[in-house]
Length: 198
Length: 88
Image 1: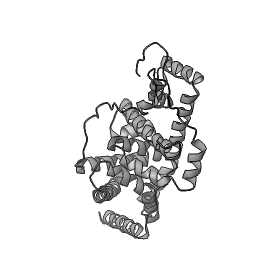
Image 2: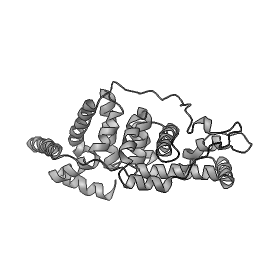
Image 3: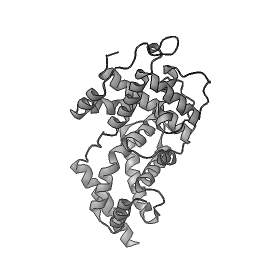
Image 4: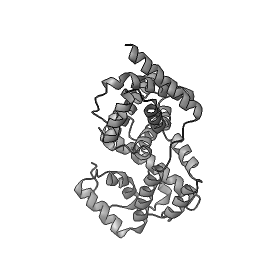
């Protein structure tokens, strides 16, 4: 358990409502997006998150701190969502044949025919100027649910791969495949928006 | 770990290995082959840099702030829990 978690837990257990608000503030939005990966609508996702906070409060005294507070919360969320979700996907996804890059960009030998352009600084500027954040959010929302969950947890929430596997109950290899597909699509977004429009 | 044919990597294979590479999940042999390919391929080097940048940019998304109304609802939720708990 993290140092900061310990202090926050003490405050939560001692009845400090500001501690709870800051916890909610910290995780509400990510939990909503994550829940949306399991259930059909925003309204249901909101219910799932609400239920998660209730379950978390009820479990607070029993929480032993074997994982971080965040991992614990997200695990509760995933369990709530999976029992609620009509989009429930308990089975392991079939290997996704979708390539990271459009095959048309390679020649017959598999070498780049249409190589990537350099857009890194431009993407940086556009995101800093607030011009890309909404598109990026929208694209994350459009990712297939499993890819979205992994990308949100790994790259937005910045959980470790072990934490993600534990929260989502998936294998390490599975996690990497989903992460690869998700990240590849997001890279494609920057390519489309900033590199030569394809 | 995935086993690759012994001959040199081509770009189309290299881009599929980027995540395993970044995650440290390639075997030592495959990592060497991947890095040997990068050393001779500026396009795949650029591609790898773009994937790193994508991860960085995604990590910069900020959670939206709670509205005042949401904040009140959560304070109410917490107070209910606190009251119930002290009654036990």
